Length: 334
Image (cartoon, rainbow, N blue to C red; front, side):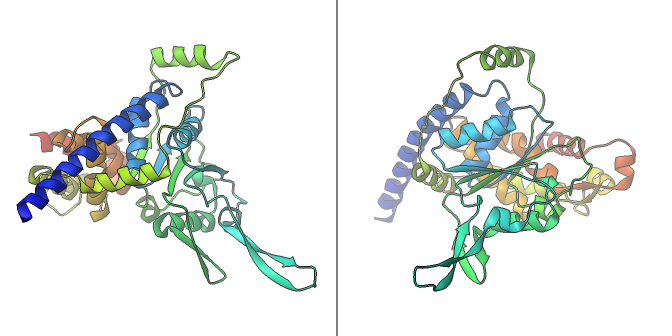
């Protein structure tokens, strides 16, 4: 009897996965109508959402980061808001605040006015321009999925995702995110310049009178179903071992000579959790029903790079975190 029930569960998961494959393929197609090129950026951003997490998009201005977030909100059928972070932004500007109302009889009472954080998809534009106080207010909401004002708890909408952007060039008047807060982001997505063919298409498609508008493919409830499915997908022992091996090899004191020499501190268990979820989501994104070692290697950089720091000597030699991760992946591949 137990075998039959297990078999039925497996069949149900496979059927749900096949339906999800179709939805995700449609999402990819709809996003590609608006965002040209940048396949890895689009993929990693969607993976963060499918995995139920948040993403940090790092790139110079003008690379369609804002447009990507807006497009995803429309395609996924999510209520979206955008906050432009500035040094004078206060926590109440994003969370909301209490205001005093007076009724016809003269009785006064406080009423909570929700801030822009009450959205299903929130774009935190140039998050490193806000003060640490404001950053921590948002990052706490990202972790807890609720806020507390005057002792009263207010739950955020479900699903709730933050896609934050950061400009790596302009550092004047910025407040870099502390390492512990960077760890709140499931992925760091580096947004680079587009390829020649993609940039040509951008010029032709975005400078005319008409502009393509994406259509909603799914809604919030369907996204929650896909996120639940991601957590049910089977992961082989080989893949689990590869995740553990890669994450642990990025920590000093674990027997990896290169890491011991170049890494000051490495990723914690949250990195392994992120890789486990994102590997499942990437399998669905690529049209497969189970993750493989290739998923782990492809996700190593976006998942690990913001969870590691190099020693002073490594930085002085011009080494980057990406160089270290690339070396660890080469070792893992054998």
